[in-house]
Length: 395
Image (cartoon, rainbow, N blue to C red; front, side, top):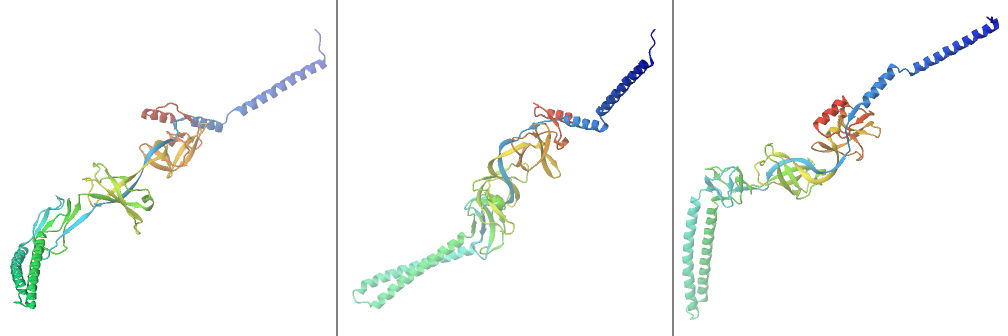
């Protein structure tokens, strides 16, 4: 066996040491790389958070352009179209009959009340007697004047006497005319002892009582002409210019069981109340029992259809008194955007400041925050069950 020299043994030792050192260095490098690649607790939390955000599943919709009816509401009093004041034209006579009460429907010419006519009938009889007397005197005067005219040409009577007979005839004619006028006056007074309805309608108030003394101009009844009511809506200056004659309005009855009443704008007041800054709009109402004169009711005017950009109401998020929507970008991240809400109709709401080509989250908005990553559910029908499934996936 050949013995090795010390020099060869030293070379082998240094070679083995070099290999060991290289292996140690490699192990150290591998260990450092492993430590660098090992996730920290913070990284785990971020990853879990990212995974959690990306796990939210939502449905999206695009805003729709729809034609909606444009309306605005107002309040106002229900009043009579025309309320007639019926009074007495006689003075010093007592009421003997009152034939109607409040709420009674009457017709033109119907007798509402009667006033004592005994004195007037006596005056009428006296006037007729005076008329007969005046007529007899006139007949005698005419006969005498004709006879005098025949004698005038013979010279048997003077011109002065002829003139006197002519004057007597004219005086008798004047007395007859005065007696006739007195008869007409008493006949008119006799007709006024009956208080007559001037038009068809319904009695709204009654102050006439049997036995009371009638006075000229005294109010006895009030009559709503043709049983016709109107709604006097109080409208702001801005809204007043939106209305035109002939537009329709829906008036709501205080009784929820009664249907809404449809009326038409008859007239728009030409002046504005300087105290309230409101203008009156007069709306004719059809005959109805749903509202009564004196009621203060609410109604809405129909301004026709107007285009509206709408989204489902459930896509709207209310926070801190403001309305927001979540818009999904092409990377499926959501952006919270503040919006202005307009009209509402059913389950949809009008948005005034939103682009029409965006995608809006329509479900699960209450669980989202600005910048969240979401999954978009596809082909999920809009049913209560599907909404429940989507909500469950979000949790």
